[in-house]
Length: 315
Length: 321
Image (cartoon, rainbow over all chains, first blue to last red):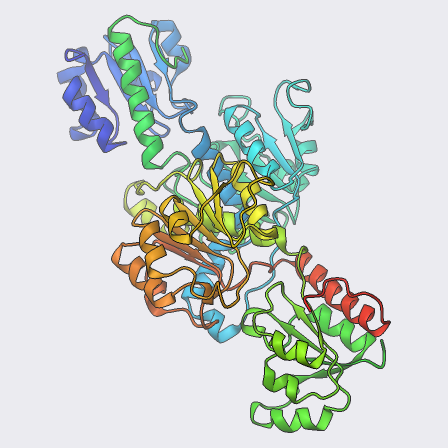
């Protein structure tokens, strides 16, 4: 695919960038001002590679007349204008499956970290407080806590499997119940009911028009003063200002957050809280997975160039 | 058991202390200043028939204490580890000893897994990074870590806690192997037995200490074991600090001969080596393996139930001796 003009929107991964540079005609979007770049190269771009935070929106798609494929280095493609792509006949691929385990591991890791206050306790030790103040405060057990999952897709199922090993009863909400497939999991027809019946609520669904702010004030209050919210989906799944207020007031017990509405900005108020664990969108951030994701992007581009079936098409 | 004279060595738990005070004749060792403890014990020796002690830094029950209490009948440990109790002396004197197994198994196993994921995925480090404003300052960048799922987990000691850890990591697709004094192949066909700790370490990505502390297991995680675990290996200790050669551990971590560690216990709690506190590849916890409200209440109730059984000459619930 040496003649494939690929526009990389952001330096998302060194290995990916290297390979794109080696195997295609790579353009780096961040190297020159946008208008200048488009004037010079728009016609040569046949493929766009973005990620969770950098996607091909309508404006960019319109500016690239030769665009054939958008290959996202992410599983979530809420930043890609799918409707526009369908209109233009542009293919879209993502990176499902290869990152499922990592995101599920993080969700469970965050849940235990929040309930057992692992980062806070680590800070306590490093600040010399174990010596000067004595034992750390008692926390609450993770095993057996009721886990509610919004979205029982690949990631949701992987989370469910893991927490079952801790004897956590699992319930879920999604658009359709799947009782026959998951006889062990309890379905709730609304997110509020799911939250009311959970100790730990995990967001694991895709972001689209119907799931924006799916974790509303009402949901958070149903989860309650002893409830914990784990978000490994997208920041906009949660009404962030409401969440911050609920955590500050004690209406929501705690949260483990990998995503935020406006990354890398994190609400100031969260930075001083002891009942939250904050991580910088690292859900798929392991060497193993990022390499697999990069290989999947490359594999999709190559299939496209060879007119073979795409490996993981969304459109 | 209102007439049972109980000596509580440390202020372990408010609920426990309240109940002991309510139901027994409670004496608190820390009511006496450190330099007047001997006097205190002498003054009350004739009424003390039971001692309640903790694990970790709250642990007591050595020969000196036992010898100072001629009417002592039972030592009830508010912990599953009773390494601080002089069992030989207890047997000589015909003393009973109880601990709190079972009720804390889940919490310790949860913490072991939580520490493993926290160490491999650098959760506390990432949390510090965000709170320090570095995610923004570095334009959305954060480094990569390594996957937890599928990592080979080696467990030293496949007892209650070891088994609970094994069950949990299996949910992450982690192959499990173990070392202990006796092989249990028939019982656990899915777990691989290794005949030495060094071999276990060599074949593991994450090595978890979950055995009891005794003469044979003291220093079981030696320099050789640490080096076999290697520059990409992670040690998780939810046992006792004394299971590990601590100076060797610290040096190996600082020099990169060991990849990382999740530590809930240390040689001389609450002292933690300065050198460890400066490292990014470790997660440090203040001996909180059983530190949940649910479990501490259950542990307290088990201590009280053992004392009551003793006072009523009934079989002890969880005797060690």
